[in-house]
Length: 453
Image (cartoon, rainbow, N blue to C red; front, side, top):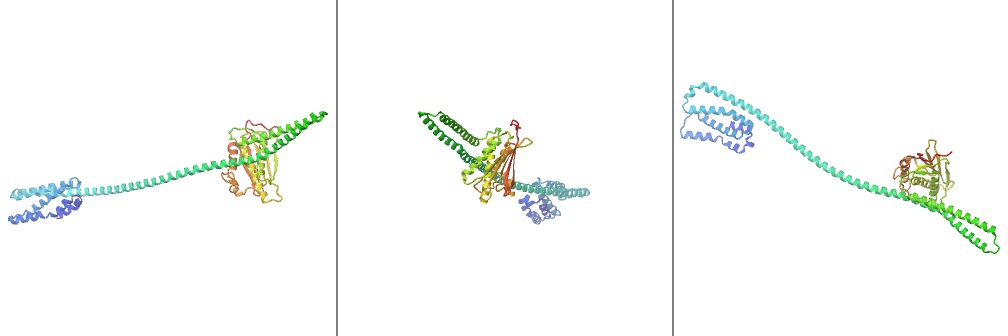
């Protein structure tokens, strides 16, 4: 029973050979059966215990053969074979008389000693093998556990990455949609700014073109009356040649004035068409004095068309030596119109706050600088710009005007046109409550007409 117990623990028989392990519970049955048979047969021998022990060794060998794939079991099998053979030979000799055993008793004792040494040595080796295998098993289990843990972590990471990727994809899609909507809105706002600028220009042109048209109409009526007088004079019997000559001179002068004002109206229409036409991006010689004067008056009359009660003083100081600069006239006209419109808006608001003793004034000055650049200064004595927002006025969509009165793109577009489109600068000098001055500096590139002395 001790051998069976030790074998069970050493080879873990309940897990490896559960059926054979259960059968080993009856290891005592052969001994009892052998004892009963000896009693029945009245077989008296001292080797009965050795027979039973040899039978137990046989069972152990059967178990070891069943476990031959387990390395410690093979080692123990190798350890027991010599001792079992010795025990079987010794038992056989004793059962046959024992004379040969007595004759070579010393040799058998020596053989028994070597068999026992062999048995215990290989059992120790098997024990070490089991410990090594146990370490390897524990190591494999730990590695397998770590592997399962890593696989679980990888699966969790893959899940998190998938969720994060899906979230980022959704966010990217939302950002793309928002960007598309923003671009559409930006395009609409830019178009709205252009249309507002065009509206200001159209109102100014309508008011400005009314003057030459009135002159054309008036001089046409006067000319028609002169023709009637001339025809009547020619039908009279006592014609006055001097009066006819005088009427012809007046008629010629009227026609010249009609032509002059008609050309003036045509130039205004051409300016409107040039402003509304898309820019080609080609620079041409531009007379800044003429351009600034035209857009100053157009901006003024544009505001007057909306508010008949508004009046302002217009001051111009044009450098006669300025010459021309290479620029895109349509874009530069938009900038000047925007600056003039903002200036008139500022003085109008200040007039509403301070109606007594305040004279709205907008000034424009051109100057040829010593380094060859040209400068345009647009100044007003309006409300000025608060210091807290001075750094933001050129940012897109920023405006100091109330909601509905500005898009916040006028100065931004003007800044881009001057700095990016013409390689110039656009700066502002302002004092809150006193007024504002915008300064445009443009390089006079090659091909521009040099200033004349």
